[in-house]
Image (cartoon, rainbow, N blue to C red; front, top):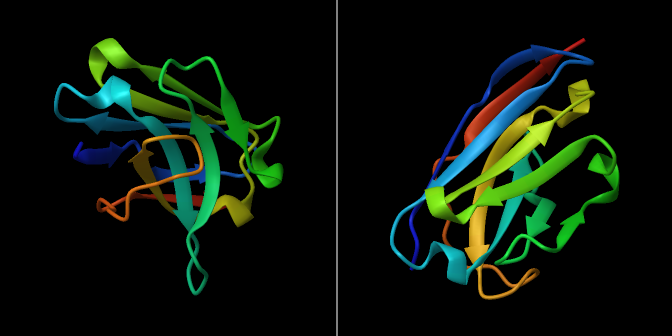
Length: 119
């Protein structure tokens, strides 16, 4: 099972951009679909975006479509989330996860990275 470490969080003003990274360990990183999720204070963790093993397919939650872009670099064992036009409601802890297919995720979560968007 791949181990994941998220980074890149911080504070940003509304309308700004932020890029997140998720570094995976092990030689099997390219064997997994990858996804980003987020959990806002007092709310459940929700799906944000996913990318297939090769990177040829992506999927987004409606509330980030057109603003967020997921990508991956299998040579670097890293998946990225580029977030543009950020809104205060994007404030959350962001997590990455892996799974055998897009939509099927391991029940294993890292520490996440906090993103705070101020108005």
